Image (cartoon, rainbow, N blue to C red; front, top):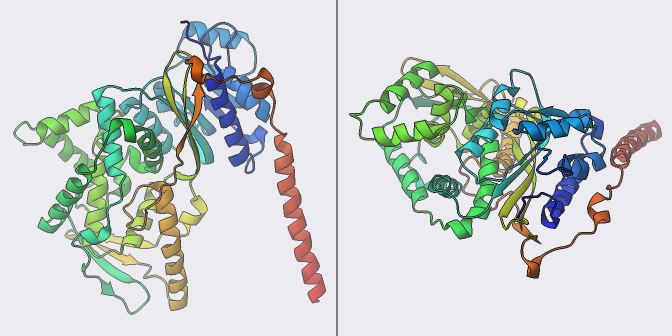
Length: 478
């Protein structure tokens, strides 16, 4: 059977993608302000730029705002010959994304419509997006992965995300009675000792053991885990390929830490040499530092958490410090679907609306003030505040904001986090089997949605109406 992307199940997925963008992104941005990175497609003659024609053109997004990637030179030329105005780039996605930061590129919609499994290469593309800030402060990420049984490497990766995504109750650990000094002024001081001690090591082992005991079944857990994995990777922020974003509890500089890890990896006398070397060689990155950050991100994260908590930093304060310095993309809205293409391939497609909440996090840039001495880090939490009432108000905001952002980031271990920000996956149908084949009239998927300008115009009118009411109220008071 000739491979083709003109199939009802795939077209229904495009309809869902178009509706998701219209519902979640157009209320914030006009179509002419939206920039897109996608794989427009040109599998067969007559099938060029299906994603543009069925998603972005009906939404009113100008073709000059769309960057289309295509590896095959022949297909790339066919896309250019259409003269649609698309920015067609004949390059592999990873190589293009690795250079995008230096070219100061940023998109509001990034659509990664792959035909392969979720694997380390897939993970690296998302790491590049979040680490290099290639998505705008409010943007949509689309991922599509093959859902059938995959390689052992891919299975191990999905299993690892499933086990580490389960929140671990904080009361399991021994930092509960960690000392911290209450100041005369609002706030407190905590002292974090460099390196690890026996207690931290025991907690770290218990954390790893607890996660390893989480049951995982590829058939039952793969669909949900891929959604959570994408959410977790996007929430890594600058930490995705740069461990120094969360590197305050060490007397070593980031450069010295990098050298020590590289020495440990290549030291065949160490008991963990083979495992660490394999993890390092399988990791993607533009430099040894990025590969180290990617290969051992869970280790760096756990050391950051346990070191800070044992030093006496309150959990919510520590998590907020992480958010401020990592700058995650927080998942605000999510939809997940699955379908079977016309060649019998099961596909798992996810749509996510992400926000950075820059303005909210910028208010807490100096919430934790860190002073590093040769022996330890001294952390003064909000000690610069002179008003007790102001401190209490700020603390109340933290207590409310951190659990909310923690659930959207899926990054830190909150014992109250019993729900997922991700949605259950819905089956759209099959284009391969006659007994479950779906038929979509051409008028259905080609029909443009309601003009996006109505949504934007209505927002402007509502804003003007609110201002008018405020002026009227002030006038009546006089």
